[in-house]
Image (tube, rainbow, N blue to C red; front, side, top):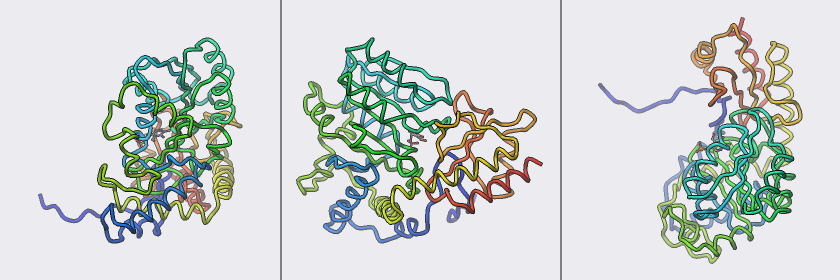
Amino acid sequence: MTITTFNPPVRTLMGPGPSDVHPRVLSALARPTIGHLDPSFSTMMDEVKTLLQYAFQTDNQLTFPVSAPGSAGMETCFANLLEAGDSVIVCQNGVFGGRMKENVERCGAIAIMVEDEWGKAVDPQKVEDALKAHPEASVLAFVHAETSTGALSDAKTLCALAHQYNCLTIVDAVTSVGGSELRVDDWGIDAIYSGTQKCLSCVPGLSPVSFSERSQERIKQRKERVQSWFLDLSLVMGYWGNDGGRSYHHTAPVNSLYALHESLLMLKEEGLENAWARHSMLHQALKAGLEAMGLSFIVPEGSRLAQLNAVTIPSNVDDAVVRKRLLHEYDLEIGAGLGSLAGKVWRIGLMGQSASASNVMFCLASLESVLN
Ligand code: PLP
């Protein structure tokens, strides 16, 4: 076997992530690698922090990208905020609420599950009932934008409820940051994690996180040290901390951080509200076209994500054949169903740079031709 340079095909990415990466971000990746303790790199990292505070709408000082994918951001939140024996109310309305439960249990904590049907938003009434029934709970955890179904939950209402019952909030915003309205400080989110490969349209592999003062207090009061060395915030903060010092913790993914800097800068140039509006407008256009083809959404109107459109696969259609033809004939990726929705839905992403009018037209035309 002769191995030569890998040249990936050029695809249009309209699945559940990663999304299309803008040439500006790709060219940022290709800039010369410098040391991760180089003073110019530190200056750039300060800017990444400021830009992330903007994307999250927060003044939280403890805001930085974890050097690993969204799942590591998730573990950072749970591993630092939970200790063995703690009780956590976990909302599950799709795959990623289930991953939260796993995290809680692996911390030796107790997950009190609030279940909603896949495709529905988290029901605040069920959450309030659980908060009332479990005064011992110290955290409420939920997924803002459930990528497995396309459902958007009301983070503002859920966080207000949690605080009413003296709970901290852990929010999964992997798919919502940059695509849906999200206001960390105004809504009282205590710990939040995201991913770079969705509506930020950066390369995969980084997980922006942010922690409120309240959650930092909780971490300071831990009786046991955090089980994970890599994700222990008390150690990571020596590198990303506020004291201006940059002590070695791990080697930062230097070029990926250039890329994140560029993608966040592009978000700032567009304006967060404009980015939310763009996603919403293009979702309406895509929806009109999909419905005209006879495809129906699994999420009720009102709690649909603009950036993740899950539609039922018609019974006479072979899921895998359609996705394969889209990929091979049109270089277009759409997403398959995940978990219990595998084989039942397609997930069409309109995330970040992928949320463009030309992509909407291209996707509708390609799908129409393959279905007919
Ligand atoms: N949470 C949600 C809602 C997601 O959509 C994903 C990934 O798709 C994750 C968590 C995990 O992120 P990653 O795959 O980057 O580890």
